Amino acid sequence: MAADSSWLEELPQIISGATPRMQKLQRIAALIRESGDHRWVGLYEIDERAGEVINLVWNGPDAPEYPRFPIGKGLTSAAIQERKVINVGDVVSDPRYLTAFGSTRSEIIVPILDVGRAKVVGTIDVESELANAFDQETEKVLVTCAEAIASLWR
Image (cartoon, rainbow, N blue to C red; front, top):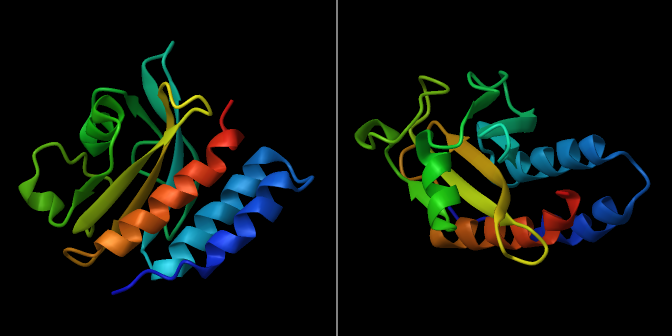
């Protein structure tokens, strides 16, 4: 299924708007979810001092099972350590998967790099109940989004 990328045009206006950061992030999570009819989207921040990944906002039927978790856990850990997209078509077969929702079949984690591109400051986490839900086009759209919204991470 090809990703709808038309929503990316809204990002500059959202980012530069006067609304508070969390409202901006909530709107972005909703846009991502709606763009591909994904079951769940979360935006996370990396707290290196605490050694944790912290959920900032989410859009979907339920709150995340782990709103905070150690940096070294899950698929998110791989995205942070490798500084690259982790796209798993069948999470059941991946031992790194940290079960958040029992119905998740595929997940994509996109790292958000700081403005200087020196380190990972956050992630975009998108989950689907369908196996192999995230194609190369979806991945490219999410990477473009991550680059566009990086300035919202301090």
